[in-house]
Length: 258
Image 1 (cartoon, helix red, strand yellow):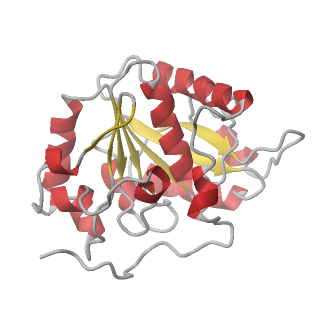
Image 2 (cartoon, rainbow, N blue to C red):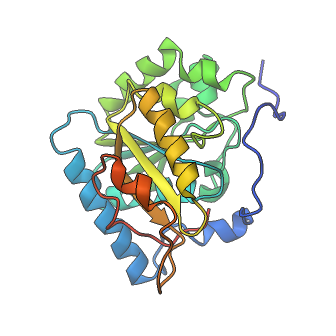
Image 3 (cartoon, rainbow, N blue to C red):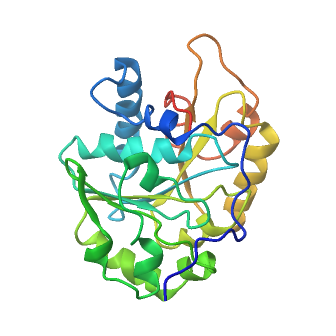
């Protein structure tokens, strides 16, 4: 029986959210400005360096709150990694308010929820070559129990299987201050990339998020700041930013809106 697409404990809407049509403009393509593509390449280099001594190349992306650029950043990092020739898998694990299927214009009828609940095989849920060297698994039908699915043995088994077929696996997860879903991956992944939005993410937001991550034994690999202005910048989060172990926080700035 298929899941019903009903609202249940999803992340709240944010006034900062823009339309999906506008959000798609921030996905990297041939017309993207040079300064933006170079910023993602810089973040990619630092991420690859952070993972150079780890056999585990599975990374989750999260933020403190909705509409801070997390999903777009995760997609663009996957695209940037794929341009190196690495085989990359992108997973939309936000089974409360998924966006990846819309941003990438792929079928949403089968996805992560379908795999974990035994409704389809992994092969049936994979959207192959959405970009060169990039495969995608969307969230799928909205389940009534996303946290239980993520925390199940099926999820751990799925990651183990996928690691044998991909060089990098990037997982988009819900904001850490909204629901705990992202923390259920901590034992399965190499670490977390934390997305911050310029002039939006506050010191208190980040402090609370990092506290939640630390309590769940999560490891932050680094920070990426989105929606950066070309002149000046916000320093609202600097205290926590520098008090937490990170790999590439201060040098990875990208322009992104979603």
